[in-house]
Image (cartoon, rainbow, N blue to C red; front, side, top):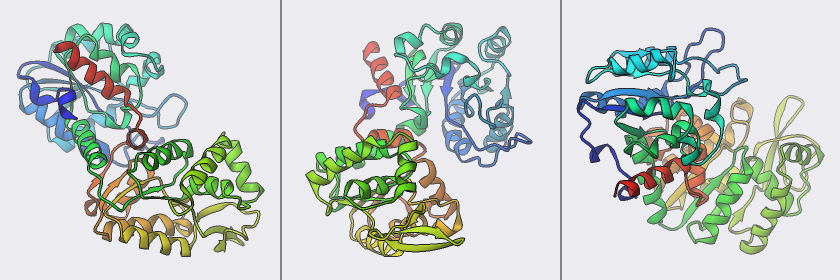
Length: 409
């Protein structure tokens, strides 16, 4: 895949001004602005350090949260944390494209690093439009004259066609950063060189994405089995004719996922329940405690996890696999009473012989929390981008990089 777009290796960046888009969206304490987890900052430090050491004038563009959320804030604290991680001074300006921002960029020396303000303070950043349309936004028009190269390292946001992700690729030579390059290479190579049995473990709270993945990987022969958990499993149980009861049906309907039931039924009819695998038991809360019940005796209580028998069944399938892709937690893993499914399946993957790819988001957080990230072959930094790749969908930011290379050729 790397031949389809440029990387940092394709450019002489010494004494060049490089605008690098990273994704350092991090959990932040809303009371004091302190960053609670620096995982993404550390992840992108490799790209930033390399650019700086090669003599580039590094200008960083990033975002934190989105308008209306408690952790929607400036990037002042991010600059301080990056400085500590890099052991290099990261300058910060509370501007994006004003005269003060442009002056700060113009005054950089080779090796200097400057972090611009939260890109989502710019209202047009949230609009999804084509690269051509995004290239005409004020952010791109104002900054383009000041930069020589655009580097996109924000794999976690690569499925979004937003200004800072695709707009600069039209008029500026562009390349993938090291995080972007590694994510695309590892995931695509895994998909291109599948070893069987290949198992997909799909859960979490975004069943539309997971059901798209299910259809894609079963249809193209990538997956031998798809093990379902979370709300995905509840939808498949409903589609299979099991009574998940009013409270769980209402939960699915309230989130706009009722139409997924018919799609799940089509997949069950086409591939059978030996390939679209759903739980044999689930965990509910009763009288303040975890209770496991069979799928034909679910009371009108919310389902919070897969049951012990299902964990045992799924773990056996995982241990016999040659390749495992996992996306989404098995239940409400933030609650210790219902973390068993997520934790035990992560342990099963870590202890298996299978080549393992862990999608980003909550399951990556759970894997890191369990101290098992190093036991996996790849833990993705981007849940949405990773699952889009697994579903066979093009990533807007990657397509923009490919088009940029073609324009240069």
